[in-house]
Image 1: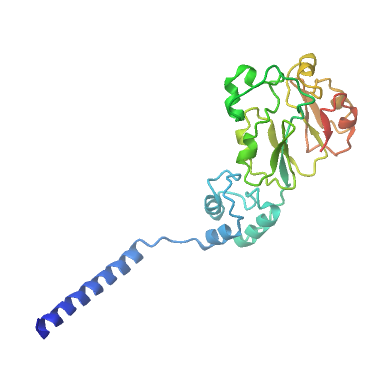
Image 2 (image 1 turned 90 degrees about the vertical axis):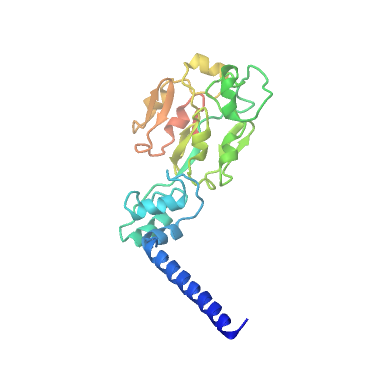
Length: 265
């Protein structure tokens, strides 16, 4: 191989390299993805749990929505007010105060207080029990099944089954809503963190029937509603309900409830 051939080969390689470099540079400019700096800043401020409690697929989805003005700055239930205020500064808006909420299981029919109709042996998944007689072994068809499907989906280890009933640790709960979604009995919802009184029952049967299934079932007697000074308690479908916007935590409903279906949280 002579010197001329070597120079030609080197020139070809150099030309190809220059061409590829120019092509990649042009492609990078042409197909460059525009990054929203605010979106990136919001994403960095979010806790990164990707729990979906905000209603979006993950933190990146929420960050994009906030940056576009399609979601409020305090939409992250895990971050709470602190994260909401930080994002508000990024977005250049005023922080929005939001009341902290936590999940609560409206049932206290544990192994001592709830009666059962039969012994269940099978898959320990509450969702699967909708296929067995009465929707589960407990006499109360509204009660917690206690097989921990909610426990398995909680990303914060905030809910555990205690003596046959799921119980939420309010200090660990981030109100992501995953336990609410999977409970087939719809026993779990969000209540104000500071709420003192809660209705720990979901039974909508008449009192005489409810009492056969659980010693602490709400019997729909209405004593709580009659004695509430703020008219914050109502009875619908034989079940007491508390309006926390009216409730002043006086404790009268819990004190007067003859079955202790309403108690202090």
